[in-house]
Image (cartoon, rainbow, N blue to C red; front, side):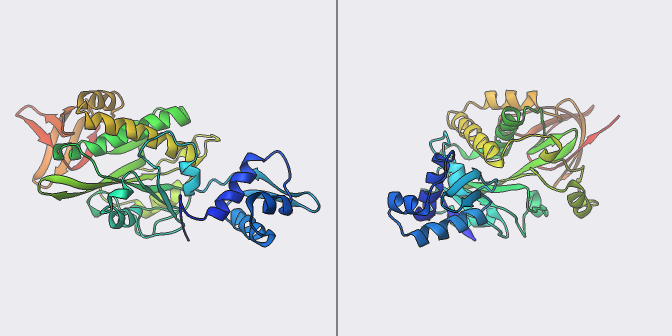
Length: 335
């Protein structure tokens, strides 16, 4: 099942009318007259709306009344009231797909899809950094955002860090929690992974043709089930989920907040205001100041994490020398 934010006009009309008149019952005939569609079409749209997770009460002689919105990340839920100019203004929803990143990469060549968000209720082939498996069951928030940035190619290594900062700020604002940022692009709670970022970049003539940001958030997932699947995999350090923080926040509220914060970060990158990004990231970092061990393609590096550079590289110091690490698997070493 696939939906987008600019299709299904009949369903969208019925749903919008029910949402704006949710204090009263609306008869099938009233809906038919106002929306200029047949009563049979009204009934079919309401059945589909119910299948999508909305609660619509039906009473004989009174009609229909919407009593609860869906928690499914449907496109029109994301775009409705979204305070951005680019991010998320076009949205696509899959009930199941191999990977939102794969879908987004297919669509990224079209510049009209810049800012588009691709959401999946579940992924059958989700992936993390370095081609690792990302367990993506129903209950999580799994999506990708397509971008056609104008900023310099040197910003691509800072972008995952900047995006993780945007999500951290969104979590602070919506859930009133204080997550930490683990270099390069993980969001953690009490030392366990809550969310991660993945970036795929297409380059042409030393310029960014398109960039696809993949985001995975453990919103309401079975932590024990995921840990069972991932235990023993490289760099595994535990799983956290937002359902451990009792809250009435809907998934769409977090996604919309993230898209707003991502757009702000995007503007900072465009104007080369990297110092502000680095400063805010460092305030939330669980890595800076820690003794670390990093596995890179050139071997293992050990030392104390001092800072991140303008390009997102982690600067590590030991008694012998100072190293800059662009990518690698990091372990925080306890002493």
